Image (cartoon, rainbow, N blue to C red; front, side, top):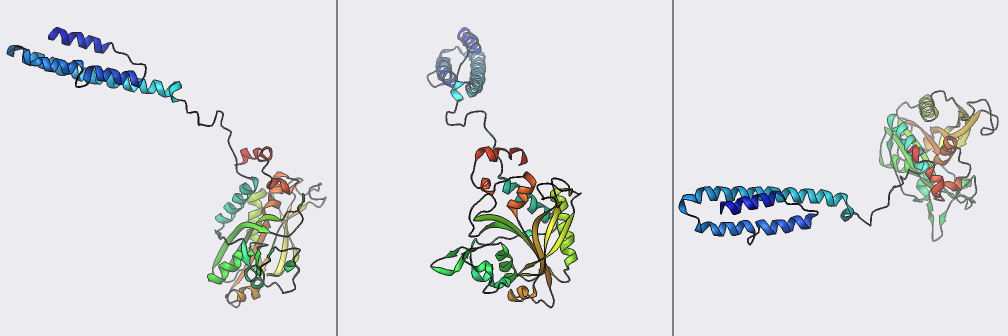
Length: 340
C-alpha cells in the first residue's frame, strides 16, 4: 500500500494539462469517487492494524497534494486558454478600435455652459414644440412683428397656436412664470426658422441664452459678465464692444462684438477689415416682459443675452459651411477628435 501511495505521489507531481478539459479529466481520474485515490481508501480496510495510522496519514497527504496539484493545473490551463485562440471573441470590434469624438457644436456648447456655470448660472430646458404665448406674446412681440411671419416661423397647420420655437427665450418665459427671483439661468437648445438652407443659413440651429433677474441688476453687471465670458472663451486679451440695437424683449438692447480671433483686431478677411466680430445680442429685460410673466418690475430688474452656437463654433474652428454640422461626414467629425 505504501509503495502504491508513493507511486501515485510521483505520478501526480508529473501531471500536465494543456487546457481546462484535460485538467478536469485528471481530477476525475484521481479524485472522483471511482478514482485512484478513492480506490486506495477502499483498500485501506485490508491494511494491518499496526500500519493503519501511517497508511492513513500517507493517503490524506496524497489526497491533499493531488487536490492542490490539479487546482494549479486548472488555473494554469485557464490563463493559457484566455491568452490563446480559445479565447478569441469573433463578435468583438477588430483592432485597432478607432476613437470617436464629440460633435464640434457639443464641444463648444459644453465650453460655454462650463464658463457660465462658474459664474453662478444653472441650466434650464424647455420643449422644442411650443405655443405662441411662450415664444412671442409673453416676450413682448407685437401681433404684427415680422418674426411671426410664415417666412420665419414653422407653424403647425392644424393648430396655428402651436409652433417650433424660433429661439430658446421661450425657456426663460417658462422659468419666470413658475419661479420668483432671484433667477440666474442658462438655456441651451435647438431652434427652428423657416429659412432656405445654404452655406450661411439653416432651417435649424442651436442657441444658448442667459437670464438674470434680481434686485438692482444693472447694465454694468451685464457688461462685466459678458467680458469675463469672452475672455474665458477666446483668450484673456479679448476685447468687447456693445452697439445699440433693438429686440422686443429687452430695453435697452445691444449687440456685442469681440476683437477678431484671427487677426487680434488688426483687420482681416474674417472680420472684413473691421477688427471686430459680432457674437451675441443682449440687453436689460423689458419691464413689460417681467410683468407678463408675473414678476413685479418695480422691485426687480434683469438682463438677458443670447448667442448662436454655430456662429461661435465658426469663429473657433473657421468652419465655412453651416451644412457640415448636420451632414455627419466622418471625415469632418474626425478633425475634432483631439478637441474632446
